Image 1 (tube, rainbow, N blue to C red):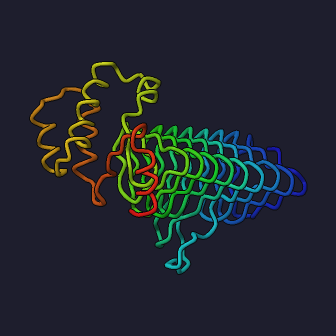
Image 2 (image 1 turned 30 degrees about the vertical axis):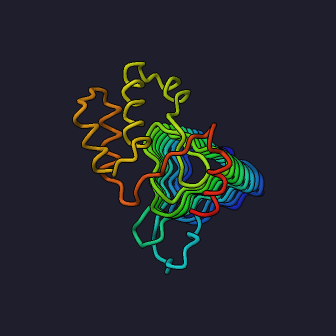
Image 3 (image 1 turned 180 degrees about the vertical axis):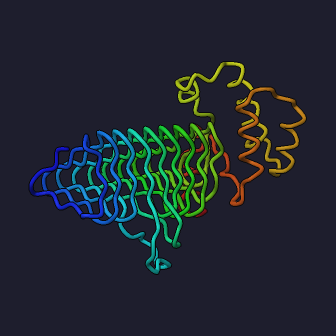
Length: 273
C-alpha cells in the first residue's frame, strides 16, 4: 500500500493494499477503497463511500460527503462507485439524502473537471460528464450517454442510453435513448455518430430513424405515437428499449426542433419554456 505521509486516513477506512493515496489527500469515515484505485494529492473522500477497482480521484475532487439538499437530516446514506471511473479536478459527487438511500455510479465513467453529480443519482456505464455539467438529485443517466460542457439536468429527469447532450443544453423533461438534445427541452435528431460507434447495426438505425419521426415530427400525443410504433412491428431490440423508456416517462419527453433551420427560434424558446 502506498499512502503518502501527509495523507489523513480515518481509522475506520478499509483500503486495499494495492491502492495509492497521494499527498494531503483525506479519507474520512468508513470509506472502502478497492484494488489499484488512486487518490491524487488533495483528493477528498468522505462518508459511507465504496470505490471499486482501478478508479482515479484527482486533486480537489469531493467524493461522498453530505448531499447538497435541505431535506438531509443526517444519518447513514451511501455512495457506491464501480470500477475504472475517472473523477477529475473539483468534481463533486454526493451521498444519498434519505437514510439508507444511495447515489450509484457504474463502471468506466469519465467525470471531467467541475462536473457535479447530486444525491441519489444513478449513473450507468461509460457515461461522460464534461466540465461544468450538473446532474441534480434523483437523475438517471443511461449507459454511454455524453453530456457536453455546461449541460444541466433537473431533478428526477431521465437521460436514455447513448444520448448526446449539446453544450449548455438544459432539460427538465426526459430524453429518450439514442437522440441528441439541444437548447432547453429540445431534441434535434438521432445521435447517429454515437449509434455507429456503439456498433448499432444499420437496420436498427433505420428503424430508430422512423421511430424518431413518429415520436417527434408528426406532433402526435405520446400515447398515439407509441401505438403507431407498436403497430409498425419493428424488430430491433433498440426500438423495444425506446418504447419501454417512453411508456415509463413521468415527466414527458423533450420536444423536437430542427437544429439547422430553427436555431434562432429555439434560442428564444430556451428562455421562454
